[in-house]
Image (cartoon, rainbow, N blue to C red):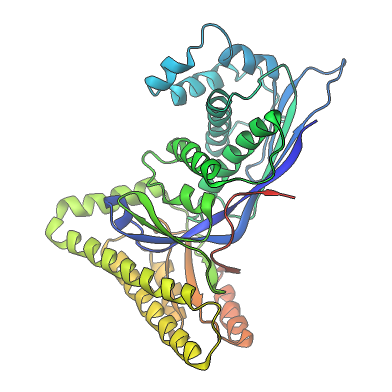
Length: 401
């Protein structure tokens, strides 16, 4: 009986959001906040039908489906996967499947299924079918249980949907490899597959994802993204810590991207230079982070002075990037309040992700005293903001042992 756990990190964009949509440079990093999936093949029982049991407690989704219903729909002589793949129809096939089973499923309650739950189910079955065919999972009459929980707040720009998709893709790939023999860790070729599967799945959540979220959640570390491709990655990062501050303002990534695009179409001669400035700023930030990474293991006094200067420059770039995002009209007064409070304490903060709400992050220089951080965090919480301290640049998707 196969049983295992897989986890994937969340992400934040340090520099370059919105500009990255137009092929400009962005710098993103993994968060030490993770999504964890537990997969268990269930023992066969004469009394119980084989089922697919799904538990996603963070969105209150508890869902049982008779396995034969899934098998008969996607693994019969009438389902032509090569043709479906060629015509890019798998997304619509999964949507039709979910419509067809609405009255057959046991949702463990009588509540109307929410939009988040629908999207999560579409992502789950899309990846299960996609990877089952691509990786030749032995889809036989069986039972299995998938439990997925996350430390990431859903829909706030921390990569929760990408972390979810990467976790599921890694889960089904690992399952297929275990069916064929021993498998203990993901190699680079397997990570590339996971990232590709997750990117295609992300089209369910976001119409045209840039690819940056699934890349960070798959590979971890700090990455440079350009022309919609991962172009560089830092091997390790010095112990960078941030405060994540939740504005508690909800927003739609899709709407925010459309908002910036509309402004660009109205005033291209103004907005194009703003995007170019974000690009140049992101490239400067990458050079600084690369130097910090190269110096991470060196502890001389001169290196400490250099690190202080690099950190200061990074703070200036964070502050400037926030100003450019305000110019793109993708910020929010609440986010600007958070960033202004940071600046008065000699910290630098900016929005992360689509903006319009969600999170801001505040960089904590390595020599910052914990008393100062605690005082500032308390002031933010008194204003009604949720504050989390976390570190950056950790591992990507992995099998938990």
